[in-house]
Amino acid sequence: MTLRLHIDAARWRTHQEETLRQVRGLVPVAKGNGYGFGLDLLAQESSRLGVDVIAVGIAQEVEAVRSGGWDGDVVVLNPWRPGDDAATALLSDCRVITTVSRADDLRRIADAAPGSRVIVELLTSMLRHGVTPAEAADLDLSGLALEGWAIHLPATGSLAEARELASAPQVEAPFWLSHLSLDDYQRFSAESSVPTRMRVGTRLWLGDKQAYRTTATVLDVHRVSRGTPLGYHQGKAPRNGFVVVVSGGTAHGVALAAPVPQRSARQRLVTVAEGVLSATGQALSPFTLAGKKRPFAEPPHMHSSMLFLPGSDPMVKVGDEVPVTTRMTTVTADEIVKRP
Ligand SMILES: *Cc1c(COP(=O)(O)O)cnc(C)c1O
Image (cartoon, rainbow, N blue to C red):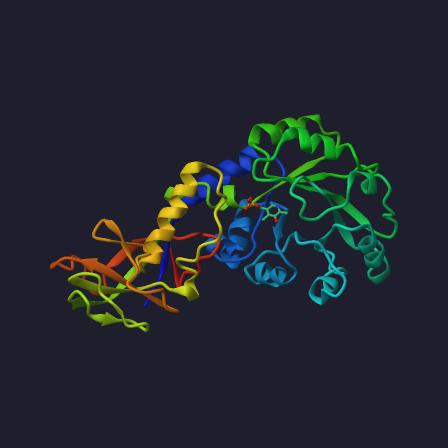
C-alpha cells in the first residue's frame, strides 16, 4: 500500500547547487510538508549545501528541521503574534530569528525576551503581513537584535516595488527578499549598501521537474459490467470495464485541489469542463493507467483510490507501479526512494 516519491538525487542536487551558485545569500525554505520531500530531508539537504541559515513557516517546524540534523540559524517566516506560545518560547533561542510584522509586537517581544533576534517584515502589494513604509521609518527597535527587513513580494515580484520598500526603513540592516527574478535580485543586490538574502523554496526544491516523480501501486483489479454498484457510495459503473484500486488517497494529499487563479479565458474553460465532468460523477483522477489519466470510480478514500478503466483488457495488474501527478505542496508520500 505505498505511494512512493522517487528522487534522482544527483539531478536534484545539481539543481540545488546551481541555484546556490546563482543566488548569493540563498536562504532555503523548508516549511509545511517540505514541498513533498519532508522537513527532515530538506534539513539534511540544506546542511549539505553549506548555507548558514534556513527558513521555516512556523515555530513548530523548528524542532522538525533540527531533528533532521540542521543546527544553524532558523528564520520563522510567519510573523510572531501574542498568544503564540510556541513562537514565544523560541524568542530566547539564540539560533532562532523571529519575524515581526507589527510595531506593537516589537515592544511586546522586547519586554518578554530582551535581545531577541528579529526580522521586521514590510507590507508589500501582497497585503499579507507587514509594517507600512511610514511605520518602518519610525520604529522603536530598542532592546532587540535587528537582523534585517523582510520583503515578501507577489509571485510576479517587481524590482521597482522592492526598491521603493527598501527606501523606507531608517535603520540599516540586511534585506531578506523572495520572489524576485534572478536578474532583478542581482540588480537589487548590486545596488544595495547592505547584505541581501533571498528566500527560495519552490525554485530550489521543485525547480527541476525531471528530478522527482511519484508513483502509486495497483492494489486490486475487479471486472465490472455497466451498472454494477461499487464503492462506499454504491455508484454504478458507467460501462463494462474494471475497477482498479490504487494506493494514494486523502491521507497522502492526493487529488486535493486548491482554487486555481482564473487568469485567462482558457483557464476558465478548463474549470468549467472539470465542473461538468464532476457533475456527472466522472472526475479525472491524477493516476495514469495504461498511458492515460483515468476517472475516479468514486471520491478518493483515506489511503487508496478507486479508478474506472473501460474495456475488456485491464492492462494493469496487482503490484504494478503507476505514475500519479501530485501537487508537491500537499502530497505526503509513504516512502521516499532516493536514487544516488
Ligand atoms: C513560503 C515563503 C517563501 C518561499 O516561497 P516559494 O514560492 O516556495 O519560493 C518565501 N518567503 C516567505 C515569507 C514565505 O512564506
